[in-house]
Length: 112
Image (cartoon, rainbow, N blue to C red):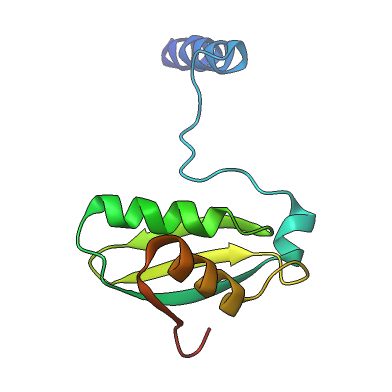
């Protein structure tokens, strides 16, 4: 009798999942396999950020650069981790765009 309850419960969950009622949690946007092969990541040092608004400004400035696909900013570490297409842009070009767009001193972190 126990297996029947398990089967019925499993079928109900499967039905809800296929109907869209249960959606798996996703923490980042899906990226196509060919994009992953074409992307690189750099870390930029951002001096002068003091608040969440500063971090948003850095993210917006970096996202304006063609080829940038993802920007994660750490206010506490004063760093921005940027994923980009190396055929389209370079870490120094992204750093320059952030510096021009925000006024913050920006440099490519060693080892990027």
